Image (cartoon, helix red, strand yellow):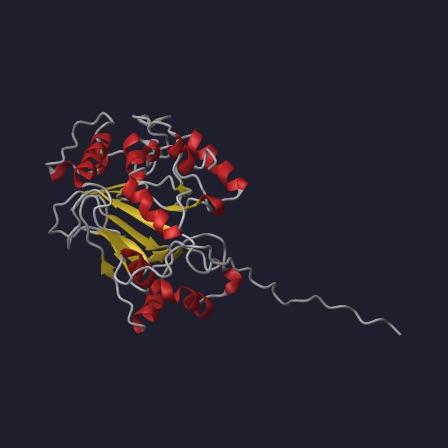
Length: 340
């Protein structure tokens, strides 16, 4: 008698979910920005940077943009706000090539006490890492590029459960109705797990920390009363949001004449980073590269080189920042290059 033939177990392996790291949001006083962040998935911290310093960073950003040898760019003349007068952008409004992530004015903004302290209050520690994120300068009413429209997304994989990353936007210009900027879906972070568990196939989940929503998927959130909300802010305000909160960057309307300026910066506890991640951060730092929004994980270098539309390297590209930051112990620890 022949022995029974063993059949392969076709049951998919269980999905390994990453638990929520510790944070200090629980028990935040009602009405505080930390309570708003926990409840609504975003918050505006007024005056995190004194307005005069914020406007100085804005001017430094504009000077940087004009430092590529093209005198045709005139901030007072909308006809000059075209691609021919600008360095290469990663989208129609953000810059992360040319070593801009490590310009002195970018690091000075990241090191602002009111910014770092806000994230220390979120996580309950001042031993933090920061992302090497991009610069946003958005010119309104550009006629040389198509409008992008909305692109609702989250920046957290469904494999991560709970709060894993709080993103930040250091606002350096006035943001009012019609000026474009961050749009969030308040409270959508509360439905992050339910949406992915019920409307996606766990077998397709990856560790990639981004997911773009289709219109029919957004309709599911609409049925729960979740609606988009533009976030308005002043120079020096810090906007923070949970990476599970649905959001996107809106373009200015035709009525706007504001040149939007902002730095992106996210901070998370250094203890969350593996030795391998710290090694990757150090390598990117040594090359003055930019990364994703994530400071402690998902550290992927972005655009070491500025590539023109024809596929060649921009001759204006740089091997180092125009103005290097002072490499203080505080900066090197936030960069993940020096241990706490």
